Image (cartoon, rainbow, N blue to C red):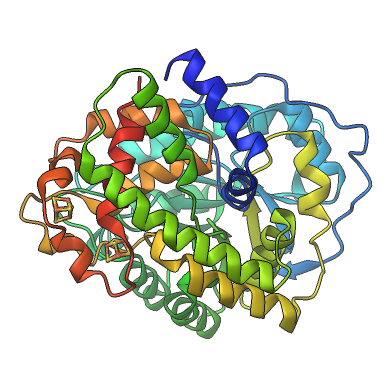
Length: 446
Ligand code: SF4
Ligand code: SF4
């Protein structure tokens, strides 16, 4: 994206009501560290930082460890991580791939000066069919080296694409050896589904199989108020097996005005905007306007209020033990930490229900992909919308565009001249045809 476009985008987000709503929703409750994001710039410092403290700890299933109900994903700045831990946060989620090991290094640099045993550290390795016990052992030891630790509390399989991967002998043999050496205490998995490849089982299928398997102790998965039904089935299975539950992507996404801004910018720059895109935008705008009207009636105009309600919703489930939040800078600390120990009210439930009803058609559900089989072009709908989420929700523009560029499948430029078979197949009524078309424009911006 050009510097000029980026400035416009940021200014728009700053100034528009929808931008504020969307940006707030989008930037909270998600694991935000990009696999390739090596940004270590010092975050903005807020003088108010430091007032809120963790008020509630929950036992992380059969690990027996009491973890803070609010936790941090993908640390990338030592000063920021120190400030977060000072509030009482004691669960850190990192991974071999986050910043190509940088997140583990940051975690290690901070924890070597703290009481290691008071903090639960999870790291993750992506496991493929052809991995061997030796390669997994080597990578796990390299992770421990970056973490500068004798052990990690949990070693997770990073988003296993299929149930079959859960049975990886190489992983389980390596884990057995690492446990016997005292290098890991527990194993688990993370899952956000929708990983485009030859074969992909749904998040629910993988998570339920993980719970039934019996060997895994901790799960990290996507749960939010829009994905309620599927999430509740997974939570029940975890409860039955006393599995520790940690969450990511606790806020759904509904924001397209930024794209409208992009489209306007494209026009200003003399680029061609297909007429069908303008039509689709008009439909999406009607949906948005209707949604805002509903929220206004409920007096739910404040973005932070909706964000808080979304996180408190997930914490209202006793089966949930911690929500991994994305702390982008010091200003994020108090707003997240103050949610610790808070109760979710019936009024908030009403507002979230209204949000789901109104904005549901703008949110392509994480970990879905049910419509993909209907696409004659084999466009990976849910994967593209996840990249779109990385771009607009997690401020990972370059990463999102890089992932989109690397797709070896047909992309959403096919959608412009299509009649939208995927949209007819979506059981949630998502206006996916327009969203995909707009996502394509966003993800190819350079
Ligand atoms: S458009 Fe609908 S069916 Fe397709 S992936 Fe998104 S939520 Fe699922
Ligand atoms: S709009 Fe058409 S080409 Fe695009 S994903 Fe849907 S069915 Fe496939």
